[in-house]
View: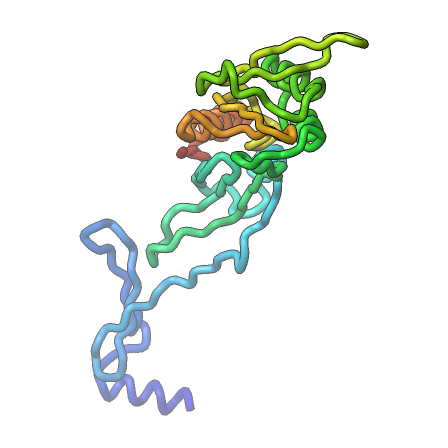
Length: 250
């Protein structure tokens, strides 16, 4: 079989060692061609091996440890893409076929809260303590919600910004107070390793009594959260960035 193949190549005046041709194109890329039986060149595409699926983790700490370990794609260059406030991707450079491998997807686990929906005072008290960072305004809301005395929220004194409610101020006394607005709160909305961004909310109450908070910063907190994640990664991976292994984009 081999003798027949060699004879056939000799008949075509193509030597076996001339069938493979390596060139460098105008863009500086190394390319390999094989001359077929008709004397026509056929390009040999390099074998591209990619991860069949990315690793999925839930912390920035795990992402940093993976990069520093340098166990896979040893000494390769990567992009860290802060996709949004809860997602960071570790991606490779473009390969010869124009693809880009994704090695890790880091997704933050954050509690859910129904913004814009009226909840009972009990639900609000639990949510404020478990899903929000302690701040001055959070503690103020807890005081108001936890001490509401009457079921009906007064409409008098409601100027569209502040509402009047009656709260217990002692064992047998009560007083009317204005519900503060806007309030500055910091819900858990991004990776726990970084500072949670604060933003303005509108707090409203109505008969029940029930209350709700409405986002009031136009989503600007997301930009701050992304900046916080980027700053954390830049600090933790400073040596890898200096080596040229990591480029962070956000």
